[in-house]
Image (tube, rainbow, N blue to C red; front, side, top):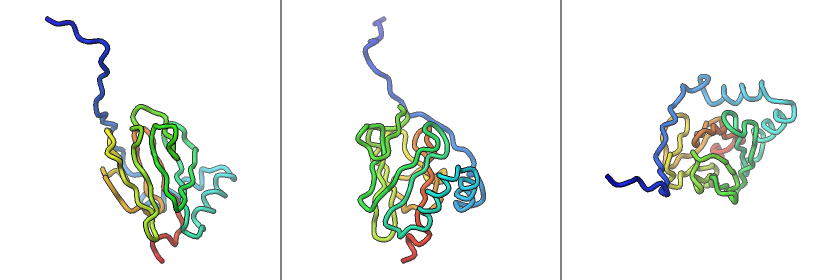
Length: 155
C-alpha cells in the first residue's frame, strides 16, 4: 500500500449549522443590538439608521471580531480573508475573496463570489440578495448585521 502524501493539503466544505433566527424580525435584531451597545456604538448605529442612504454599516454581532464595524459606501465593499478586503474576516472558514456588497440604485446588494463554504442571509443560502436593514449575513463563523438608513429602497 502506498504511503499517503503528507505534503498535500486537504480542503473540504464545512457544515457550520444554522441557528434559529433571533427575534421576530430584522428590526428586533437591530433593537437588541442597540440595547446592548455601548453609548459610542449606539450613536454609530443610530447614525447609520438615520443616514441619507448613500452608505450603510456592517456590524459583527456574533463570532470572532465581535463588535467590529465597517462602513459600506456607495463604492461598495469586498468581504474576505485577503488582507486587502474592505471587510477583512481573518478565519479559514472565509474564502480569500468571499463576497461583496455593492450599491445598486437605491439599495445595497450582497453577492457571494463563488466561495467554498457559501454565504447565508437570514439563514438562507444565497448567491445574491438585495439587503434590508437588519439582515443577518453569515460568512463562516462570522455573523454580520447589515444596518442602513430606513429610507434605503423606499426612494
